[in-house]
Length: 304
Image (cartoon, rainbow, N blue to C red; front, side, top):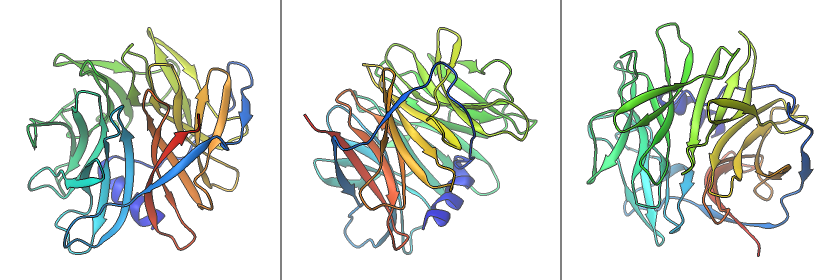
């Protein structure tokens, strides 16, 4: 299921690119994730048999967004919203895939949709429908919207005419390109209310992704020590950063970085764990694969 899920996401959000890096700004201290409790999220809809669930974000009210697949669905990926344990399908009409990737504390949601043969576009979910798409500056139809803060500013990335990733900030109808210096690719995934943006980049052609924090025009590397790759996905008001890394055997692990401390976030007994956005209480949304290959969403909650 891991490979099936990724193959679907490669159509829409160009999701899986492995990275390799060393921690650039001092060695982070690593810890085990024993101080979290985990809850599995599986989409439940009447008359629907789901094949996978992936959670990407949880806001301060505990509302969750992500995507799922199902037997006989028109779309390969379907967006979902969970509120108080009730699931609703949130899909862009007439599209082949819809991914809901983030929601803020004002219930504004963003994501990406795709239609075979016409590329993919970011969107803002507004009034129960996809608003006019967030098109990339180059007009190539290759935009992914991944993060939204409480001010309505959106972070994401697009593919230019040369096939390279470029991060962006979309605010008040205007784009700002987010490209880390001396890199060939940059992707933005999460944005905090302060305007800080997290994501990843590739330093050289054929290289691997490294996690990054972009603030006041400056990129800072954020990588899990000793990992083969790292990608930062979310940031909250306290500056905690969430994401995932791969180890030397290419297994995936989530992480949470708090100050100089960085800890692994693994769903118990999972074969792979991928962490995404983090809310202000430190709850992390993500998904994992089990021993049978099934893909399930999760919410990790810090123990108090």
